[in-house]
Image (cartoon, rainbow, N blue to C red; front, side):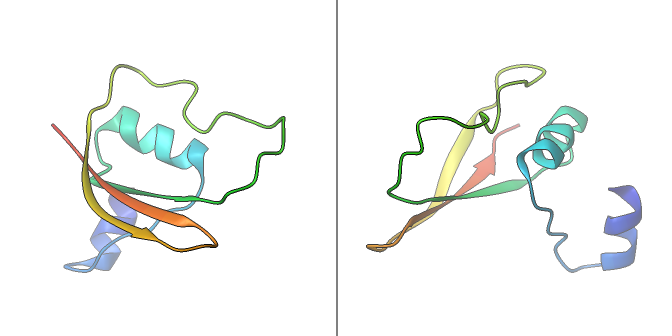
Amino acid sequence: MAQAKAAAGDRDVLMLGAYTAQRALEAGVLDELQIHQVPVLFGCGRRMFEVLPSRVELEIVRVIDTPEATHIRYRVRR
C-alpha cells in the first residue's frame, strides 16, 4: 500500500476485493469504501468482512440507487 500511495502522488489509490480491503482496514490505511449491492440472493457465498481486527465505523458519503444496483460510498471514521 505504501508503494501504491507513493506512486500515485496526489491521486487516489483504488483496490478491489474484500480480502484486500480487510487487510487495509487492519493496517489503518483505508480511507473510503464503496460497495455495489445487486438485488440478487444466491443463498451461499463468502462474507465480505467476516474477519476484522476490531469494530469499524463508517460514514455514508454517497448513495446512488438504480434498478440494477445500489452503490454506497463510505468514509472510514477514525
